[in-house]
Image (tube, rainbow, N blue to C red; front, side):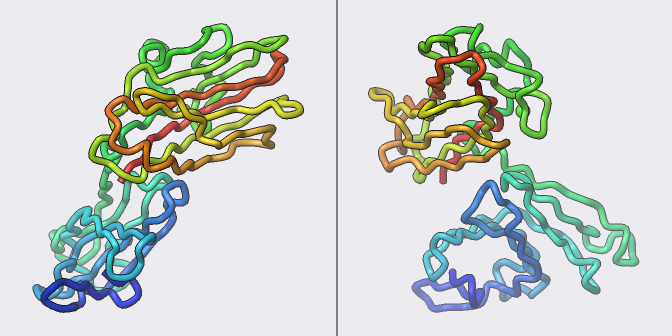
Amino acid sequence: MNLLTNRFSTKRGTFSVGYAADTSARNRDYPGWIYTHYGSNGLGYPLSLEITASDLNAISNSSTIRRLSHTFNARIDYPSEAHPVPSPDGMRVVFQSNWTNRGGNFRGTDAYVIDLRNLLPFNYDFELGTSDFNSTWTVSSSNQVWRSSSAGDGSPYGMRMKSISGGGLVQSTLSNAVSTVGFTNIQVQYAIATFGLTGSHKVYLDWYDGTTWTSAADTVGLLGGWDTRTVNLPAGAAGKSGFKIRFRIDGTSSSEYANIDRVKVIAQ
Ligand SMILES: [Ca+2]
């Protein structure tokens, strides 16, 4: 697939997949993909009236296309097009459709949402309750790590990690493995805000291949607010049934702490 020409190559030749009517890349927390709507181009165009996600990491002739949905939309003008837009995390796409002009006037469009969240091997926003948090994360001490109603990023709840006065182990580890078997390009994404960190004190992200813990080399010092981190893990993180992650903070004062929210394991 060549995204610049909308032409798709196979062993039998190169042909056009259709006219990309609208394209959006507002998935700012899921970079590398664009979301496209193809218009009603007729039977000779395989992506006619479909919404797709295209991989920008391989823009010429080897790109992956995810065919997400048909629109069943009948357009007569620009306002009656499907206009799909992804959410910031790329896991939901909202679009409009008049469902083959069922209202008879090409208006009266309804909104539809494509939900892709089950594609994520792990997706946790800390909103499901304390018992769910306790079964999902194994913490070094509930006095230092807990689900907090003042630690959420754009949502009520997140995870608070508070350093121990004088130093000591403060960490939170996934209790159960998240299998990465069958996936490649493993990424960990999380929102983090840190407070009071001094000197070289940081928050660390580690990953586990079922045998060995490795630092992901993504260390976070003092931040001025929320930051969304997207960490590309080495190839060795893929294909592991025992894959886990953990967060650590190494401050030495109780005023050094971090809030963490929207933790995802992303795979392709
Ligand atoms: Ca949250």
